[in-house]
Length: 195
Image 1 (cartoon, rainbow, N blue to C red):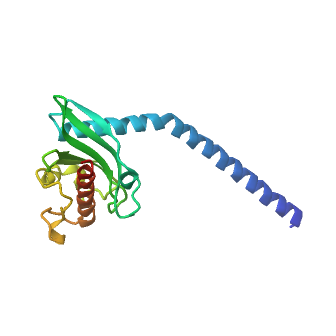
Image 2: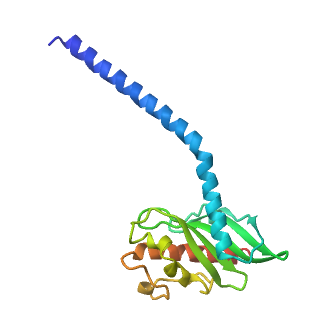
Image 3: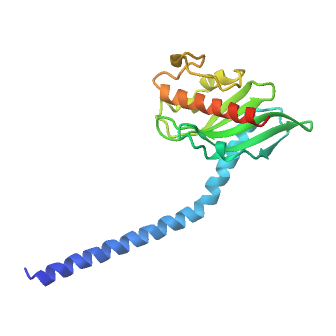
């Protein structure tokens, strides 16, 4: 076979693959542009529903500014906080809701934690996760498991029972259980820092 024909065939293959890649990238970019706002809006609605369920007496929720030590922690083991909201009723702050993102077994979890002004945990809800179905996913689907956080002290000292604490881990999902517990502790510590 003539080497010039062989080289031309390879060049044609590279050009065709390049065009296919370019078209796919354009289609992905277009799809992202169309769906990005809707995905963001769904996340806000999910967060608001969780906050209303955890602090049922709240009449409104107001954004609270927190420092970078919470939103972009230097310690990579500390989960980042993506939002803090004062739950208000009768013109007073009755609790805070914190959206925190600890790392679980399957990746990042999104967790809403309610912290009462009396220094107790009001409750918690996992609103998004990538955990294993039937195991770590129970952090969101097993409502009986997540309720054990309600009423616990908001002093940042919670731990799963395997680590000497009072939180019962999900069977077969200690990593996820520790991640949720860390998220609750981080939320409690953040609220305590608000003064």
